[in-house]
Image 1 (cartoon, rainbow, N blue to C red):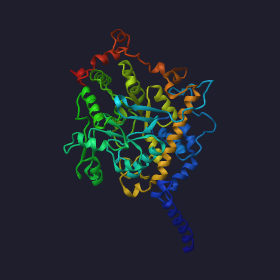
Image 2 (cartoon, rainbow, N blue to C red):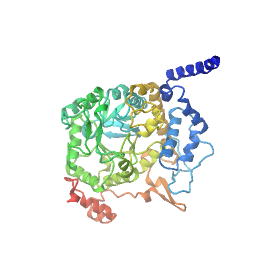
Image 3 (cartoon, rainbow, N blue to C red):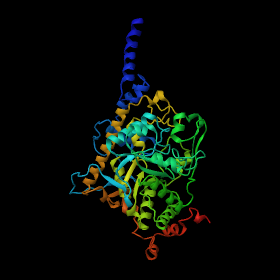
Image 4 (cartoon, rainbow, N blue to C red):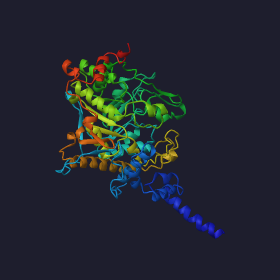
Length: 509
């Protein structure tokens, strides 16, 4: 019996030691030996096959299928699929992109767009795909460092999230988009107001390329947040500029401005304080007349943000009330189409760029967003998958088993920054390449030529419509010309009449 115990125990100890020392698998570093159970289950259920079996359903199976595809690309594994399409192409909701008999060779494998630079300001050349907002505090130090290092290696941008610019963002060396939310973390006074001096000092860092004002996020638009005192470590307190040991509140709305023109003046204030770095804002579309009010304010003040980020209501977060996560905020298709149309109809579209975020993970997702008006995209969930997230759904409990969404150092150590940064870079590279190949297959010379008419959706078993029919575009200046405005759909005229450049709530009076 003793010999049997020895035969069993010694190999398990050797395996455990190997698991703790290897660098590729965070789960095995944190849970040696027993973590192999997950990989055993994966070998029984081939993940790429499940991508097609499950991708036509909602919720967790959909995310699991996308996670599988991201893993293949991040790990440089074969991401081709046997047996062809296994989706039901006659089911309502199926979407596809038309191709051309005269398809092209891919001539632009790294499509980008230039943001800012007007009036002598700084211009930033952004990738078509970038890392969406995820704060240090929500993600671990090593996860943040890996994302930033991956962004540096791949030449794309990393949004800091509203938690402020941490040392780990800077250590990674990537191009940063500093997001400033209602808590003004990293640039706030002792009583929680915006501090222009602190902002000017921080934004001068060369790694910070752009600034983003967060109005709302798709996961919980119109909802503030709280970081409990127990989680406010000395490090987080210093980064966010808050007292240690007290609850940290993110109000539901800003105190630096209260009306549309005030928002635009705040944009200009940040642009001047950063010496011309591009400044934009992010929102999940709610009341349409409020966005049109911002458009009216752009025209009345002459201040136009360098970019506008549209976050879909399907976006995620580590923790949000169910009602907000599932039932508040316009989905990306509708929100993006509305913002793009509003800018076109107000004669502003050529003065700003538009970002899109909301479950963006494949080249086709980028093509769809591009067709609906996006110049570039954000991805959060997919970037977490590239880091090694296994979707354990423990983001709000501080015990993420792979060390991504936790502040527990014992779990965060499972992430090897060099390895995960490489995976983030590879995922980005292959997904952008896939998008560029779709553009070439459509016979187009560049990503700017992707139009709504190039994409189709089945709306019933016997009827299909292209995106130009589903999401019709308004004509240029249509809201500014009385004659053109009369020909618009009724709701646009109503929204326009309700919008005021000086009052978000004008329609309520």
